[in-house]
Image 1: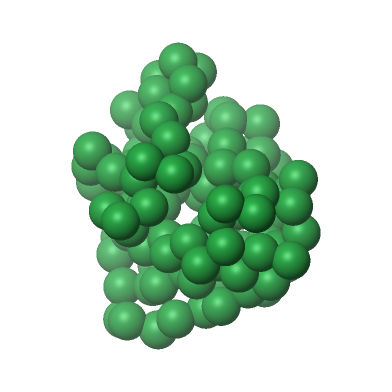
Image 2: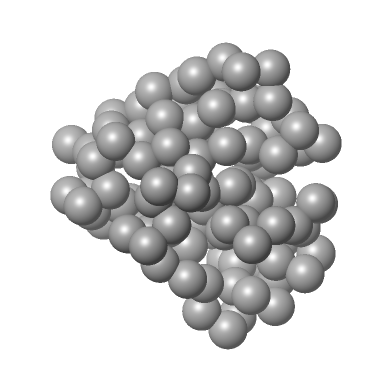
Length: 106
Ligand code: FES
């Protein structure tokens, strides 16, 4: 299992145990992390699973592909470290990952 911490705008930390191969979003939903709505169910078509990747993790997580980049244009308060959590595939290298939920989503 890979541990991911979601930090909401109020500083609350939601630590989840994620199975490899799932998406970060699926684990947020399963653990009722506030602010991750995932209205499209992970189809990269809504941007309601938007997160900020902790800067220390940006290289490991990687950059969004073209389709995700297009959808990020619809995300609230997009930043250079924005990602759609439904497009972050859980794997061993992400153990300890920290993701921040944008304030206006929470
Ligand atoms: Fe809709 Fe991620 S769940 S874009």
